[in-house]
Length: 294
Image 1: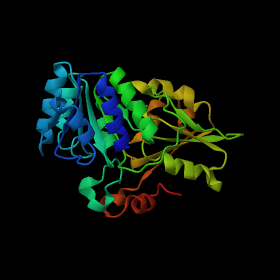
Image 2 (image 1 turned 90 degrees about the horizontal axis):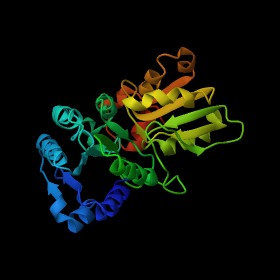
Image 3 (image 1 turned 120 degrees about the vertical axis):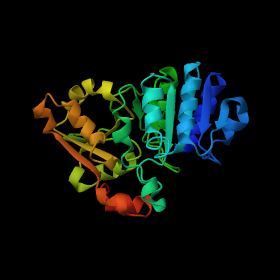
């Protein structure tokens, strides 16, 4: 996903002189295509994420769409106050790009486990969550964000994720992207972010045979209002995420149905068990131990 991100960002920056990239002394072997092509719009802010966010806000106030880039927990938790006050409150076009969402950096331990980041970022009232499920959705999310500049959080996997779409989809906040629609669908697995491959594996299991798979790459507080009409299409909706259940994607879906208890009863959430917070290992191993892999 991160390679798809930088390739698409370079293409978009060719036609938009106000796209800038600021990194926190990370991203080597990834960000060079942008840095080499647009050196005047690339800044390495160093290991100083609070300053990086304030710098991005200042640039955005002057008309830039700024992308800050780092490993997931560093541009979120480490500078939550700066993002909340300088970016979200001011409603500025800053996109926080978080690489390694979920347990992608599981071998580096809890400091790198991004399993609470959605809980933090989704309570920012002006922020749009962008959590693509494959490289094509990554490119689609970028196109949407450039055309609709606003505070946003682009949550990427790490690298090597397969492509599940046939082409780059059109994405809009809160809308479900249908990946598979088998005959006699009785339920749907609704995922966000890099759990799309896991969702497709689930749909091939006996427990979820004849379940559709949908993904929601864009969501926010404002997108809650259109969830009930989509939930009504299915008798059962299983939400899937590589995040703790508290404050995560499944909780967001349930909150969107707070006034419709009959629809809430259709929702079953699958999220990571908190035990992963104390574990070190590969992403695949930790996802299995965390209970999101069949």
